[in-house]
Length: 217
Image 1: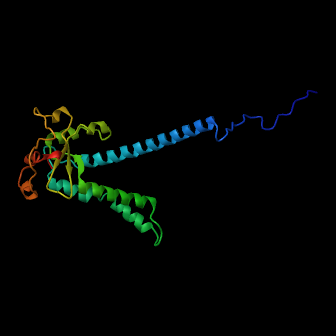
Image 2: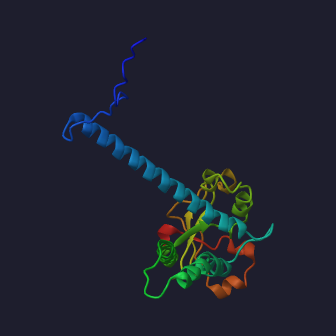
Image 3: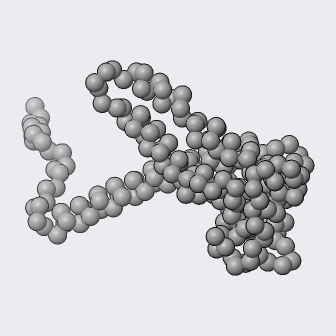
């Protein structure tokens, strides 16, 4: 009869336990903190990328038909009636679902914060792709609605609710099709913005140059 040695209880690999004040424990803590920071940074980057794609996608679908440009009043209407109000329906659902006396849900708080932040951005100056500029629109149409590096080549303007008749060139554009022979500098005004009434009487192609550089204001 063969004698077999009984297996020792708990013979598996023992988990190493380090003294809380040891050098090894401190190293493990640093690694965990670094991993947490990387994870948070990755999540923030993904959220930012999604938000940017959503923003540029909105203006991509707001482009006028071929050969046309948008007027300044139309741009302001799009911001007020479509962009800033895009979460209103979901916000109403969240408010309706909340029982009386109950705190706001996380989603409701996020939507309200987004709405307030974007309204303030519009008041002080919102940067958008320049849809008053024909060449810029033609370039924007070539975007695949995914690659964010491409939209950095576009020409951008800044508009605000506090000064609705003023348009500022915030970025003249990097694509060769947008670069003129005489390069625009930050100190060179393109033209002083017209009033809304005079804009409405002008053809879209005329309005495309009705812009000032940012440092002129």
